[in-house]
Amino acid sequence: MFGLIGHLTSLEHAQAVASELGYPEYADQGLDFWCSAPPQTVDRIKVTSITGQTIEGWYVESCFLPEMLANRRAKSAVRKILNAMAHAQKQGIDITALGGFSSIIFENFNLKENKQVRNVKLELERFTTGNTHTAYIICRQVELASAELGIDLSKAKVAVCGATGDIGSAVCRWLDARTDVDDLLLVARDRERLQTLQATLGRGKVMGMEEALSQADIVVWVASMPKGVEIDQTTLKKPCLLIDGGYPKNLGTKLQHPEIYALKGGIVEHSLDIDWKIMKIVEMEVPGRQLFACFAESMLLEFEKWYTNFSWGRNQITVEKMDKMGQWSAKHGFQPLLNYS
Ligand code: NDP
Image 1 (spheres, rainbow, N blue to C red):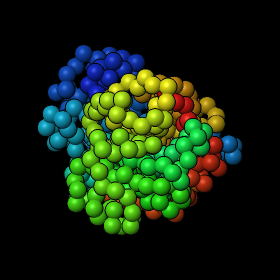
Image 2 (image 1 turned 90 degrees about the horizontal axis):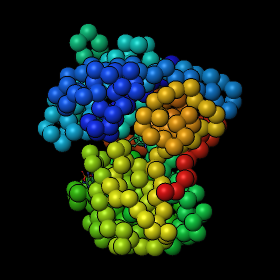
Image 3 (image 1 turned 60 degrees about the vertical axis):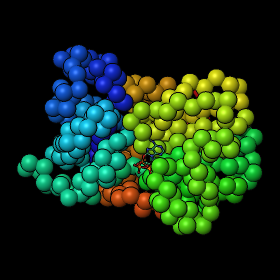
């Protein structure tokens, strides 16, 4: 059995969907209430592969909200993730993906040192961040969308915002190894880490966000921002492909230019309908088939009976692991999303 630990994008979003999930008593509650709410198993899921194999799993809502980080409620954020992991393990789930901020909190607060959660000793091999699949799907979106839009990768500059992160660094490594992309523009706040990444890649330019945005033909957003940034679209190159892999979205601006193409990053579409309701709540256009690539990773590990934390730790994702995950993804019927807005 596979599991997905997820969270909603804001307090407002959580209040709006609480009734829909069958928890009307949560609908008019503030942040304090969500800080004390326990994890909930809210959706039973059935997925069939194009090979004919069917698997079952659970969605676990951690009740974490990004406002907890913005409002110095870090202790609550940590408790949400540990409790959700213990809850998933107690349900007997073999492999669970830590969606959105769950894996970021796990890493940032070094939660591998907190394995005892009341009477549950966390077995970390039952969890995966899902970041290998996410990074792979974003790279394929870069390749497929640029070909479709007539952006020649061998002449293209790709800005990676969040380049030193787990997903961002994997995207840089894969684009370097598997494509002939002209240049990588490396963006994040910590310059030392950017310079280390540049040295390991042996290429790329370290840049501020504004400078990178004005030079990039393709922008990959994978910064861990609790709230999206507003950008001035007049400063972007035309044409420009923007792939927003953040959850919540990194890009706050609604773009309106015929030559600016925005894609939801790290999202896959399954070839068959999935029996669940949770993707309607995170506003997927085709909720029966579209999902976060990190969630799909735990499904793929379940299909392959590969019960181990395939993606774990920071900046450990190799190009070979991305290729392997990509083969499983295609084998079971998942495709990168290519609908522009
Ligand atoms: P990490 O925490 O590992 O990396 C985040 C990166 O963003 C770092 O390079 C960090 O560097 C940078 N960053 C953070 N804040 C800013 C800022 N204000 N400006 C510029 N750079 C910034 O995160 P992950 O790689 O694990 O995840 C990245 C994003 O992908 C998150 O939004 C996450 O929710 C989303 N995600 C999406 C999935 C999907 O299936 N689509 C699955 C999993 C995650 P520095 O601190 O130096 O700025």
